[in-house]
Amino acid sequence: MNRFRLAPMCGVTDHVYRGICVRLGCEQTCTEMISAMGYCCAPNQRATQELMIRNPVETRLIVQLFGKDPAIVAEAARRMEDTGRYDGIDLNMGCPAHKVASSGEGAGLMLHPDIAFKMMRQTVEAVSLPVTVKMRLGWDDRHLNAPEMAQMAQEAGIREIAVHGRTRVQQYAGEADWEAIREIRSRVSIPVIGNGDLFTAEDGIRKLEEGYADGIMIGRGAMGNPWIFRELQQLAAGREKTDVTLDEREEMIRTHYEAMLEAKPDFVAVREMRKHISWYIHGLRGAAQIRNRINRMAEPDEVLTAMHLYFEELRQAA
Image 1 (cartoon, rainbow, N blue to C red):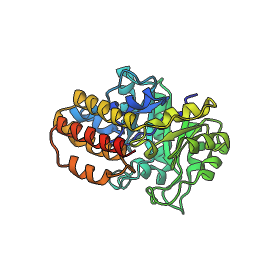
Image 2: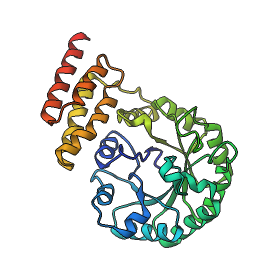
Image 3: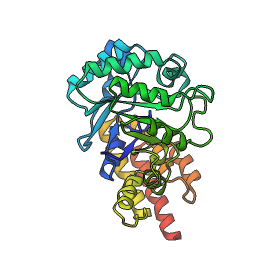
């Protein structure tokens, strides 16, 4: 079983970053969520096609679909299977974004279990690939129906469930409720993958050892920290984890930047790398100042030169 996974995050986990995480030990990846309706209506749309790219190093890639019409989601899944690119289909029942959830998609499906069940069952029947689901604990504290939804998923033929330990209303506030995830795991015989507030490798290993979940899915804890997967592998093997050096951090920024420039137009790569760089250098001395500087830069070479000088200053001060 693939215990260490990268959570799909819009605008973060594109094929470039997923490849970085896989090289460092991530065992399973997932595309950013793709609209089933959008794909069925305009399958060749550039934005959709970019979301569908598989990095050659990805050993197990799942495509995640979102929607609210069971027939359309099932048809999108069938077409995705026909591309031959993916190892599984994931149904998004956890996205808390207002635009998505308020329309009855993503976490909005937690309020409509009948529709969710039809979607799961029809998708399972439409494809031969394994179908999985990612959900939240419920819509709010009055609708904590994830245990029942998990049982419905199992009945529909879903192979495994990933659960973020918050409700839709919580978004990312408060703390993830891992006891609730453990309770869901006790209700079903299919694997349950836990997600939420896993910011260190020690957190992840502890959750597995204490029986909270069968596997873990790292989201925000992997932003600017793809090394968390290396650390998970090291701790799982009984070894001490390797600290990330300044040299390694600088080299990762350069490697990531160059891969982005190869995959995307320069202006897109420059814009998207700003957030990644801010995550890579978070907590380092002078991070806020250098971040403000690079956010005004438009040329890749200028950014990389500025980053090199920044890390040189850090090394000299160490």
